[in-house]
Length: 589
Ligand SMILES: [Zn+2]
Image (cartoon, rainbow, N blue to C red; front, side, top):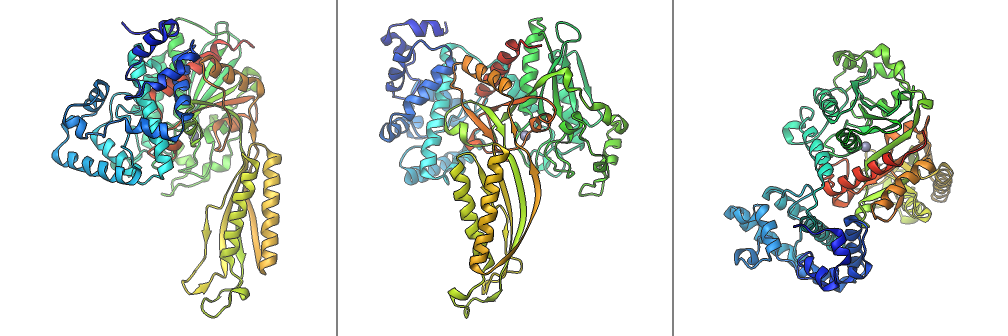
């Protein structure tokens, strides 16, 4: 019989401790310290409390916890002296069936890792879906993490320990993230479609209207029908639109969704998570035979990333009447115009203007998205509520000095363009950090025709500045531009600067943001508010209707636009639960 939360909440401490025995390897003190916080309203709250105990326990206790774990496929496994939990996990990951070469490789990695960090390598070998990583994935992760900074790696071990505990806790409570698994599996299946040139390398690339892209649209549409949507269609720009009708005809709709295109060699969850989470909710509603007092429109946006053509947010743009006809003449790298690609796909170009939605027919737009940053992962928080999508401004510039002999030009007589840009980069770093939530980047810094023995006479650079509101962004830009002028003046240089892009911030609508906050709270999780550093489809809908976003934690420091992008079935379940909470408590119609 599986344990229930009510039993756990009311049992004598000794009994509760015994039930959770083995949750953290040889470290009962962690469970012991959360017991006074009972009753817990949810397993998610208990899990979070456990992470807090460890994060507040100090470095020595954390090292002790890590060292209480056995090495992967190490001596303890060979001599069969692992705990029952570890035997099960290492066995499931196939570590007991290593080839002699794999076994030797893991032993070498164990030795190198221990020599570098002084503690054993910890990996939740049951992985983000709970079914077990394969030996290849394990060895690859081991090799990658060997290069991490020691402080980061210590934190990464603790995060893996919490993931191991989470899976063990689910086993004890007989809990399975059913919708989380469904969402995870949908994403896995969708990732089977990738553009030629990338598919062969095992990389995920789905750009606008390629065969893989159109296959994705078909599959999403198919799964929407299977989930029980009342209407499913692919519109004139390739968006997949599913509608779940309201209880009463004529009621307004809540719109949600995200994009299914990807960057080149991207992750499986960027965008797609925001399509599948609401689909899982509709599947539940349908299964329960329930209708909401409002309709739900889930849109899989065809294009957001601007990879094949320069147009970005094409899918969401079309819904707000912002599809620019001149885009149709843009050509991809092979000279195929967007018009040709759309005709080839059988899309009705003439119908694009009809896609524009009447905002009065909608309650607003909400979007779930993987965070694409390290914050939630670092804070051991599965969900974050977005306060605003950052406004941004971009420039391309060049500083011009004098190219001169590196040997004969004294240091006080140089007109070095590259050191000026380097000084600007240091200023941007300091000035953006001052705001707390602004970011500034000089991502390109290039000395044209530079030479090892020549003082740089020219330096080209890019500048990207972002902040949660336009005033803060503009103040940041003003200071950075003033610094550029001042340092060029001081160094006897001149410069050019061209603004190439400016996007307004999209602050979340307070009423919608509060719905996400209430949902996160109801799950027993702390409400953590954060701006979105990246642009999202919600930014386009923001122009015509209220919007608010929910972020889901990413693994591997939240890395995104990268195949290492990852999230767990458990976090996806929480996203589904939060979404369902918003739907069930959305009263204004
Ligand atoms: Zn995205």
